[in-house]
Image (cartoon, rainbow, N blue to C red; front, side):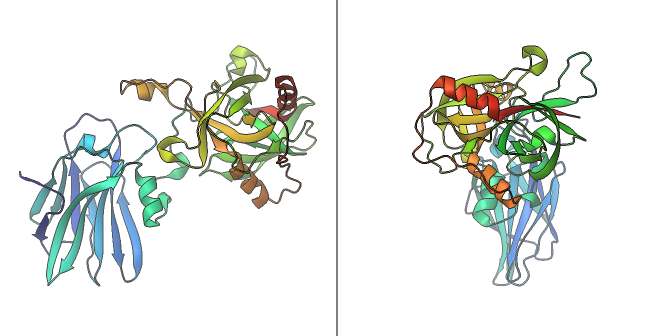
Length: 380
């Protein structure tokens, strides 16, 4: 079968109701899906098929409608590209075409456009796409990401996507643990994935153990807010000004591996290595201070004592190594400004903000602050 290059136009059956999309060959273990995006006078709508190939997509070119056929990775946080599963074949009616192989690296490929012109229905080969996957496509085209993938179950490039499993003998019915940050007199911020699926949460602070209640969850940004009556500790000042810079020295604090390393707070030191996360995600930053399972929900703070980010993940070493690379010290935190937005939406008053003129603290002062402001969380 001849492969068609980008720009090629093929007349196809005007009465066909669907386009069948298939992929074959290649060795990549990435999961793909396909979708059709229909644009007409009524607006834009997308119909995805997340099952296994071949995918059957409804097409409609009435009322000057144009259909974009998209093939994309279902988890664009992972390493891979659609082209590793090429060639892409499109079948409309009795016509089957194959896209020419390209060397581009895309997480989402716009395979073709289908439209009507001069009484004929045409298929135009595209083959261009978005390096950063379906998320970038949705941002560019103004489409809801939830239409294409289940954001709530979207995997993150971390050591664990669930709370750390505490295996201490006699630890009751605890199912996992994580870290949290005191942000007001009775509120703690942590990751959504730390409390996801739990029946109850207990916050362990310097003043003892406290029953907590989830009051707000932001699954998209992996944040959760807990109400903890009677909480003892110090609310940390939040630096939501976006003043962090590349190379800035930071400390990370949390409670990793509690069954192995005991219940003491662990503090590590490093730098901000990027102001963006995976695939250019501007809601996260990258830092080098070492973390481990159970650090999720912990604090990344500047040397001035301001909360810069909420620890959320570390790049999965096994994924990178399977592609011949290494990934030491590649850790991510959700920017503190998003935590402020969630707190404001929950109606929390008196959010502590870092004074713009705050001076740098000594390591000893910062250590004492973190011991008062970062807590352990047990979930059941």
